[in-house]
Length: 459
Image (cartoon, rainbow, N blue to C red; front, side, top):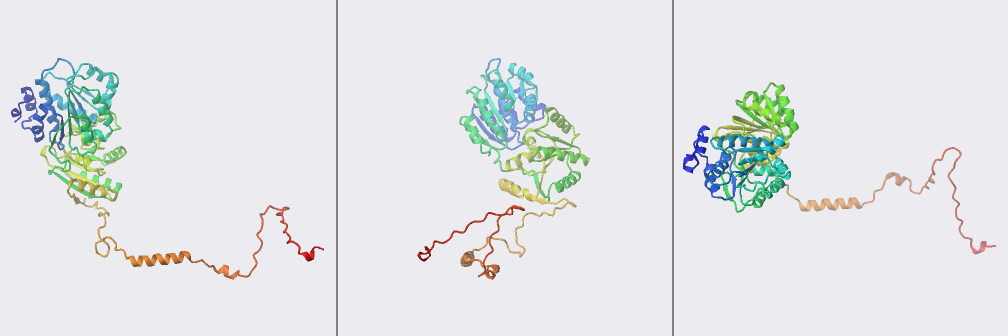
């Protein structure tokens, strides 16, 4: 029970209003350490409740610790606009029975309106790094009373190139603060470096290895011959497999639009979301998704960590994820909070090595299935020769090798004699002809040099 954590009654009331009664493992593990005033480095899988894991102790500290009446006390950085909006919605629910305020600073929204929000000094600000840094560079009021800086999906922000922005932001903040880094995985090579730059002896809390996906997600692979075969197969799959809503991932924005249009032509209720879309269009698609008017959402990896969509029962990797971390976050959109999930990845010959790499990363083997009537000619890489014997490294015959080298050397050293050269032995060669200068012109003649006269010829 949350009451055993010593939560403020206003927070208990807000949780009861959402029918949240039991803390998750990460919430219990983080709460006391966060209240103790230590920096944190937390790894917990998607859907484990890590958002409340930092919101609850953060709000508890603001409510109980003495402070002045003005100034922003907490800053939460998120990699995408979608994740920032999701955090805003969850924070408002937690603050429902308090007088605390929250504001959001992200790209795609009116700059002047955001600046007006910041001048009101809300206790909590949620922001994306790029837009917040713009406000800082335009003399945003200093956050000299900040108590906690939270980086949500820190590794994703690094992947998106926000390292310098994050460092620049933290350099403008007061040093007397705590910094908490949260993510579904902290195995990213740059996270350790970032933590060293921004935190002070952080307490490390890991409830996931980062290389293990949820056991409640059924993971399968469908072999495919190419893009056209993938399109036919996914159409059949979406028509036959039971699901309420599905999330389909591709690796490029162009492919998102193309696949979305194709599925709509097959009369499948499909929406699309990627980084090139205007914020208004993104919001419209997400609203249609939440209302059930869109059953299939095609997206790039921006949706893997930036969106919170309930009821996703099926995740399809139309293009295989480029690495194990991205794969983990993609399939983490299904099977949330212990529910059953289903993930299917399409694999062409060019994607087999990607699949194998993800399997090694996760320490598992995916089940290979076929869609009846849409079987592929590709059956995976050949592991045996036609003779039936296992293909292994060839043995080197050193003696035969030396003999071949000697023969090649003799052949290279032998002068080539042509038949026409044999026929011309003893014959005089015709004088070389000069250039053809046309009628009336002849090449110049060269006078022959006479040999010197002998003594008997001088007279």
